[in-house]
Length: 172
Image 1 (cartoon, helix red, strand yellow):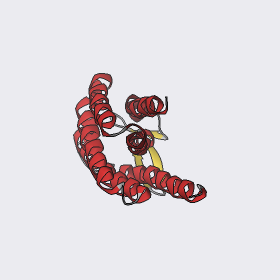
Image 2: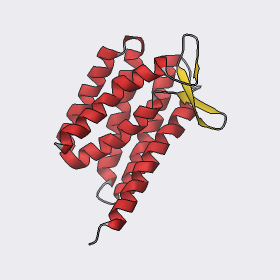
Image 3: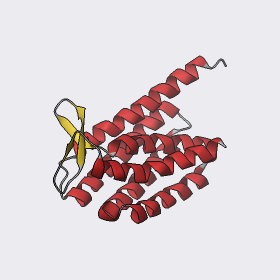
Image 4: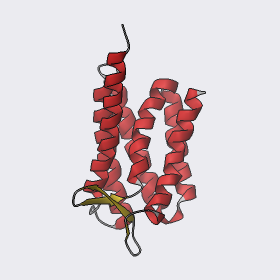
């Protein structure tokens, strides 16, 4: 049951993020993304709210369901992205596929040493890849990449902090 919920939440992030980019934000650019502030003076496309969550959910899904299910969900997510967001299809699918595979590789290597560090490092790797590739493919420049990276790191840092607190509160 937990695995199914995590997989569904992970996959739901993709179409929801693509919807947010075009429809929800404090500012919507003509023929461009809707933006939200992520730091004073730093804006990012609003879909980042859910893509940051997707990176953390992917890590949680791997813990609950293993590598095979995660890889299947990554491929399903890329396919879903292509099918549901025609305007952003190539950018979204390519960025999702690259960032999630990179997140997977980094997380898988580090998770046995330290889950919180694995979450942070994989989140950083995934957010850099996703933000740069998506910005360039979707908007023709890396203009929004700094805000995207920062917002995704918030999600990874929050998940890492939660893991740290959770582990300390569980008696050995």
